[in-house]
Length: 401
Ligand code: ATP
Ligand code: MG
Image 1 (cartoon, protein in one colour):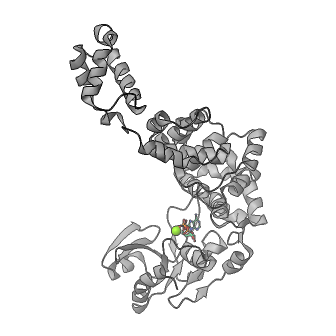
Image 2: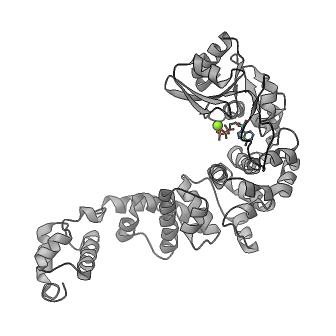
Image 3: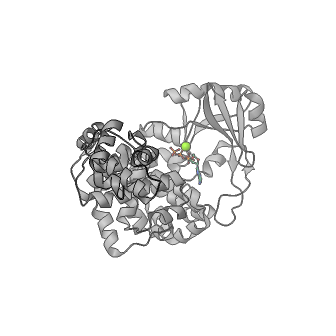
């Protein structure tokens, strides 16, 4: 048993000692069987949320209606969820309330895919009533029970299926795929926030291109905001070298470039992404188009900053087959005399004093000129030297300054 499970054993033991059942479930059990690194360890139990809360010192009630309590043990948070079914579904979304049940099997039955419906007890014994291990051996993503029915219950599962294809590198089982083709339209009932979580995990998986091809093959892409694909774009996507990006900003930037999206910000706002991410992605997309036309030099590295410049380099490598220019970008950045306007030895106030003039449009133009000269090392970043240079340009001082 891997360390994350061993660390969580005392929780299971305590629940069992009190007379409840408790098992490891979900992604961690799946990943341990596959041999992937294990993420969060989740626990399913027959104890009700209030009973779980009474047993442990540090708990957080996540949602009484879904039966989930977070137990913080040795500083690590664990989701402990009461065995449940999801009762009746309305509007193709997760139900607002659930029914607690007494058996592990019923709990596993409400889970989305067979690979996610495996439990493990404290001895490491596997409970697998729906053939999850066999699916892992066959490397397929298939729903627990009838795919069409399961997607009717919660349409997000269609996105989840494709994100697991990308993350695990598995195939989409035929019935599951057919059901996505037939029920894709149900995705409109799901909130964009939930879709975005799965979409980002899909882009960050090991096979993002296979997953994208599936989104196209099943037509599920038609129900994603801003996705209007021409046949030519579909072809480009099928032959491009989209590999796992190092970072989600790069993934979104590649997506937008492949989709030939003109209005980056409004596209990403439809996905309700945080403003910071929108800004970061916008900078990489703009930088990608700009740097296609020119070479990296001090000005470019200064303008974009190191982080964005490295993202642009990655996107360029994947989409334009440009060589990896990371080393020269790093070297250029290292030798920059300043990294932002704040580091310039003079500011607007200084220039007004030196030129004996009030502020105006001339000021920012002059600041920009000095900034450019300093970055290009034509002028040292030193107050006296800049003053001298200003005085030597009579024109500037006498006239428009
Ligand atoms: P990850 O490694 O990305 O966390 P995961 O399998 O743990 O993958 P989660 O989204 O954390 O995925 O969900 C935990 C478990 O809850 C899943 O393994 C699955 O059993 C169940 N589950 C999650 N979402 C759904 C859903 N929409 N429908 C049915 N079961 C779900
Ligand atoms: Mg998880």
